[in-house]
Image (tube, rainbow, N blue to C red; front, side, top):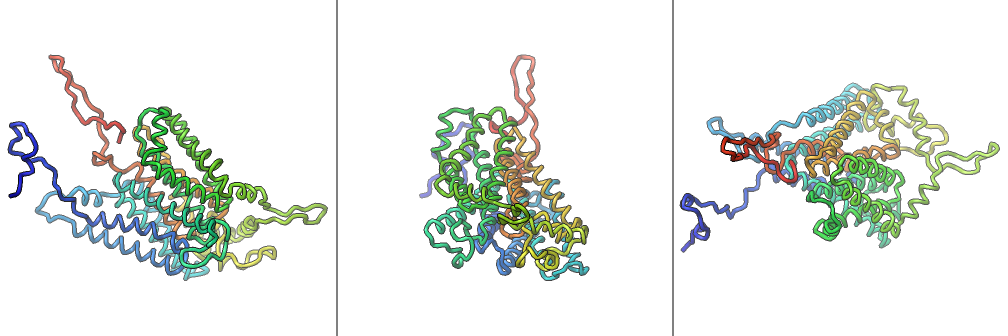
Length: 511
């Protein structure tokens, strides 16, 4: 005999015929949920095959994003209700909603850039048409990835899951890389390491590319830690609870990633990370007066505990020595070179100026640096260079002003969106996510002066995702709302003195 689930609950007389027991069945898995997890799996995969910086892995990236996009479009088409029926499910309605205006502008800028790259290929501007076409496909994939993140992770639960996935990816890279180096195994994921032995590279070939990836994932972790605070007033007890609670796993992940960043011995990677932490962290503390002490202690612990104490045992001294011994130019005494410069990136940049001046507007074609640069360097530059070791100069050489300007606007508007979320005082979650996005973007912008992280598909895709997170920090709906701006409560006092509150009250933690 099957029992009545409502029989175990006492109800007032007016509710005796109403059963309010929640359904024991889980909500059905929607196409949006499946596609969201597919994107998360793709983001976790991208760094593994040498940063996806090989022909087969970058092609897999393009095919995967194209397939996810087609699947999403098909799901939206099939989910359209018949004309005679009214309304759709909330999940379907949210994914079918229009992109926020900032996202529309940013997507348009990415589209303009890809149209220009296709024009370079079609009009014969490119010095290497094959590479330019490959870059056009990658650029279209990045633009579609940006749009997918906006439409698939447009609520707080999924946005948190996206940030957590990036943190897990960075933690794996850090742990795997440190383990390989400390154990002396020195293997990448698919074979033995040939370069940068003795320093942490994770599954990347170049330590600077691991550092660039960790800069973004550590920023996401710090932002997530700040976003998930409870908003209670500061107390030493609450600080100890933070360090000993379930959030300790996130804190340990940050420690592991910082250790690996130091062990990579990437000079500009560490400089960019700590510079961005000081700038964005200082701004965050200044604008948030209510929690200034608590925020200051959290951010200070990242520097004091992770760097000055823990990282001291994992190669901090070696990193300091490498920075001190950096020699940009030859030391000449009495017309005799007494010390050779040990950095040739500034020499490369010197020869890029006349190349940029030759085609300032059109550029030489996306991906054509190796081919186009061959006739410019002098006798002091030995060997072939695939990249300029400076993303800004390489974009100018390859894309020209016509393609570089939309990309610059894309990054600056994304940073503006992140800072706007950071400035929000009415929501701890939005300001925390904005902190992570702003710090990650600024850190990689600083690092790009001496490296080419944005030429590595895994890092470029993660950077685009970070720009999408900056938009979502401002334009995702509150947990109990539909994204519309809520009105303040109105208080009406009738003649008998009874107070009636009309309107929706704000939640304790803000929208």
